[in-house]
Image: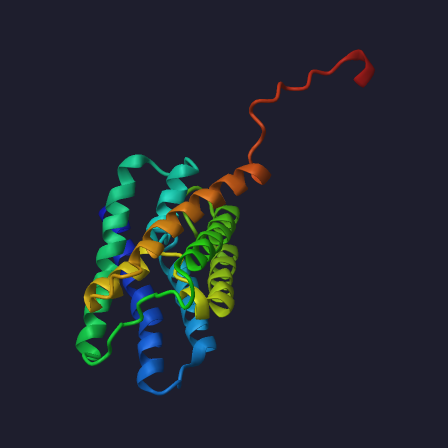
Length: 228
């Protein structure tokens, strides 16, 4: 269990350091990374961490994903809180390091809505639902591992960041939004990025059940003479 928690800490640290670091460096360099570069950074770092840590902890890197796996009955309740604490701790450590490296940056890559709060709230729910739906489709148990999982999950994160990033920041991850908001003290819109991904993950679990799990309420078909 300790190895799993260390893996989640390191994986989420890498995600936040690379992803929000790309945003910070893009601001500092006057657009040198670009919006496309930031989206690709998030997708590629998740892909890399799934390949690196998927066989150890499942490479959740996201409290909403961990809660989604629990809701899908793929991981025990006793592991949920330790996973979430490790993920948030890794994210905060990454933001603290970015604060030391870029002390003048105001937001450290915090997610803030570009339009109405409810618009971003709804978008974050939908984005996370799609992400969780994909994760459950390509994972084994509570583990994101293998070539299919890395490519699929990394691709959907990059894709959603590409088209939704300018409006919501495309967080889909409470730890990713919590850490820079706490360290930079930009807490105004944080509620969106804490609540919406959790609701979205639950929606993704329901969608997965609709297409993948058998209808347990239906009586099994019994062969009759007419069927033979």
